[in-house]
Image 1 (spheres, rainbow, N blue to C red):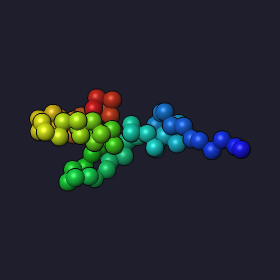
Image 2 (cartoon, one colour):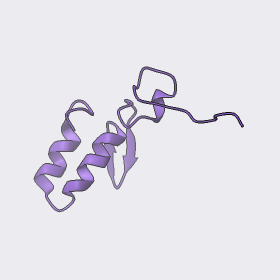
Image 3 (cartoon, rainbow, N blue to C red):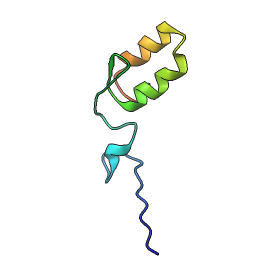
Image 4 (cartoon, one colour):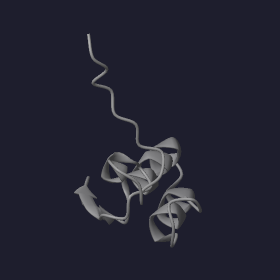
Length: 64
């Protein structure tokens, strides 16, 4: 049986577009998120509007 797994650790390597750090805006819940990592991290602060909005405005997924 052959291995059909793919690995994506860095956004600039093969399959990098599947990484949460891949720069590609997404629209969810009425906001445009710079990356899926921004969205993921903001969900931890759904009840804290200040932190939620701060994450939305951060420049990079690493900062988020």
